[in-house]
Length: 268
Image (cartoon, rainbow, N blue to C red; front, top):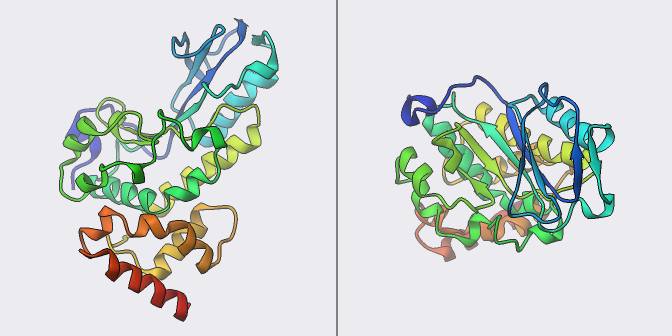
């Protein structure tokens, strides 16, 4: 099976690694060396009040957390007013390395994310849930392409403002999570990163059919989340995504899937 870097010609990096873009406003000055953790600190014209984007190197999860703490708890960044740093215009984008992953595992990762997308949106701030720069996959027609189109087509045509963005596969070999708000809360960022890492590890460790079984869905949600969910909670949260176009390509009627879900609730 071909790897992403072989198909798309992106640089190869081995294993789970994260890259992060911290978008912040009211930055007075940036001093000192960032070379250990960051590639660059750039002006961001989409932001206001001297907004800047802090771009990390590809790093392990713990180093991304360290980079976040370095911005807010160190002495290298001077802020005009800490209350104005993390506005609704700001965000935190997480890139996850897939350059060394088989194409089918990438497809499976997309499917698994789409099934539990509400779980990820439950974690982010309210301002992100209706933000035009992180549109839920469930609100688009992108899922129609996942099972039928080649990976290069997906990377080329995917919407760059989708909350879950596969477009960077073509040049970076990464999938981008755009959901997360800008925050000074390093612990909240750490939780977000661990959820993404949990989904990545689940994807790599299991082979999951397109029509996911109830037991596999239960295992998936509770593997990704750090909060235990009951089966009823999972069905309520994921009902819309379980009946979306992705699974309707296998089970062609919504009524059939709804019947299966109702039966599962009775026997759970």
